[in-house]
Image (tube, rainbow, N blue to C red):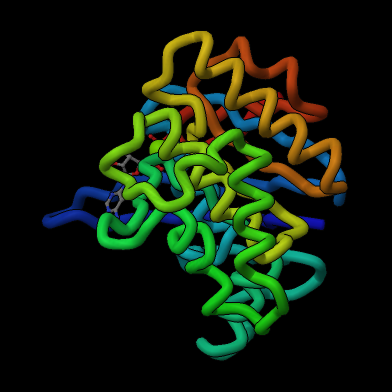
Length: 221
Ligand SMILES: Nc1ncnc2c1ncn2[C@@H]1O[C@H](COP(=O)(O)OP(=O)(O)O)[C@@H](O)[C@H]1O
Ligand SMILES: [Mg+2]
């Protein structure tokens, strides 16, 4: 379960300007939910995902994942908790250009408890996202949609219970968007996972079991 209580993330810019990226927000996501947060650009979606995933420390409030306050852990344990439990699909796929597609997918296993047959697992995931023939290609040789699918495979390699997806369909045409959503739906249905996806595309809400709208750092039904 993911539980945010009165969570704020405020940024103080030069002078007295205060940006309330996330403001006094409460959110509970049960295990096995597909939660979707819909909001326009600048509404605080990426900040919210970073808070859930422990990439950003809240300026106020608490974030618990499976009962654990990520900020009560020391650095090493926090990184490991994150690596093992949470898969991130970043808005910009951020694949390492000098590694092959396969090695990019394997990369997060370096930060989690070691497990066997990483290569096989990574290849299986590439197959799942329809890119096994690109395993030995480099990211620059892929389209944006393909890179996003590799990023999805990479997010799954440690077998996370929670997948956080930041606008996984942005910059895609409608057909490619549908392909990506089918994949995410499959990851959700077959993996017994909890998904939190943020998007500016309201039409995608039908995929989710729980939808919230985000405006200026605040959620509403
Ligand atoms: N590191 C930061 N420093 C200052 N302001 C930030 C930072 N990150 C985000 N913001 C601001 O917080 C607000 C929400 O940003 P963000 O979470 O990226 O929104 P979204 O993902 O919905 O586009 C924006 O006004 C943005 O400019
Ligand atoms: Mg964003």
